[in-house]
Image 1 (cartoon, rainbow, N blue to C red):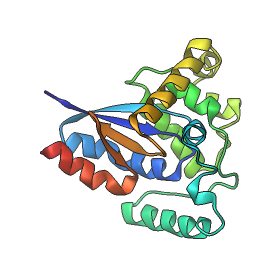
Image 2 (image 1 turned 180 degrees about the vertical axis):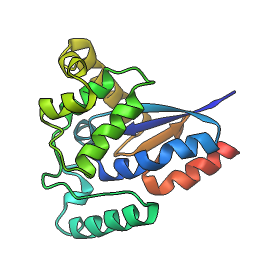
Image 3 (image 1 turned 90 degrees about the vertical axis):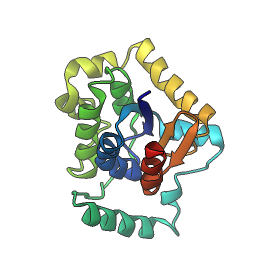
Image 4 (image 1 turned 60 degrees about the horizontal axis):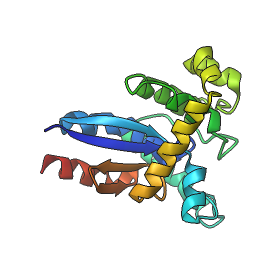
Length: 189
């Protein structure tokens, strides 16, 4: 039986950006199916009672910025801290929720790179349309797509998610890009 990785993410999450650069290789090496699950991280924080993103506390933010630069250098990808962080990702995450599972990865990579490398305003409908298409942006306003994002966020919370990125293989949860090696080891057992 093929194993499946459920990857819960929000494009506003810097560590989800890091994970997005690595997770496809982990899935391929582990012969696992990868299921991208767009969520609203703000909705997760609200549901679990987190007051704000942990990286936004005055004590942690300077370290987080250095940590992200180190990770980008280590994994050899580009990262430029956006001038507006965090950014409202409701539109972007709805757009992703309206796509087929086969189309989410390409669109997610486009949105992640636009925000975390090119510093584009992914809250702007015109920017999002230029990245993933006008039809996807227009469909993001449909009730069914709004509901799909809400349900995936609620599903993530019910499974135990408290932040992003979070990965599940069945009921086994792995939180954070820095636990992906443990995820990979679990998949190989």
